[in-house]
Length: 491
Image (cartoon, rainbow, N blue to C red):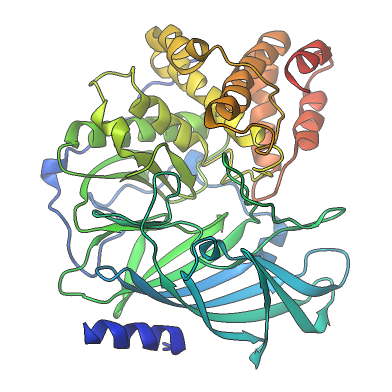
């Protein structure tokens, strides 16, 4: 049954007033000319011809037995693209998977970092009105009835978003050419034994949020269906009346971007559809991003674990760098400007890096604030693995261009609070991290190294891993002493 709750009603009222792996035969890039600029309210799930069925080798790992108890988010988003307004009705079904009783829930509300952006209009717990305490982005919700282990609770949150103007650092917000929604809704933060609710403070560098794996049903309605923007999302969409329905399972979050300037190029990897959304003048770069991301999906699916989502979207954005999300990543526009038609450029290398995050962030979660190397060092070194297997003549270039010319220093295992600048943070976490993984690989050998990565991915799928987890799995695969390498690179 369709619900029209207060936040959506208000928005609609306002809108009315105004080893190498050979290329797969399925790995085919489609040039942009074959694809018209799509401006329909029923944007199809794929922008190219219907892809073949996903090969068994590329299917996502089977959900863990407790997957039915993952948090479930249903979001009904009414978006006024032209006026930068949104009304949202959000229902969260949350199951207590801890061993104890919970007297409160803690949610992160990232839009509250921008004053005046998040306006709460309705809050109910199991159908009854409730109140919450806010401190910055932290939302604390006292439960009228304690939530026993294994018990579930339903939250209804209605709110408006007055979407802010986007700056260079953050993806959330609007620019002259697009609106990006990343971390745009309240979500329940992880409750980890011995740590409690995990919600870190933002830092000048890196990402501070930690996410449980969750399931998402997102319904999108555009205020002007006669002239809608093109929407890039982390999952394929299906029209259901006036709503577009996106379903994304086992993900850290749901993100999307809308623009009335997007052009598109597609590629496929074993049935996984990859779509690149880019702006005028960047056709060659946009096509390259789709092609190399599809190659990376194909390669990493065989080296680490099967690709965990149905599709992958690449979104050009006015930002300084790339930014991962589930089934989607953003890429700074200046990387498109400097694309040189070869494999030796930031656009190509970072497209591989952000694709690798679909495993090291999306499939396997971690504490991005305290242990950022678990996703960033692994994603950076995954670039090296990709070049080695697919473009071996460019490996030496990669080592120099991406790593050595910066003369990186620092401890691999520092937190985002240990490095005050972007350069010191990336030098230590990303680049020294690549050195550490290279030296570890040489010490223990390729067979053990790749078996460790594959085992780490599969055994921690849909979970939140830690350095302790990583080393425990490594030690199960080898008895070789690598302690001197750890002492060299870790503080």
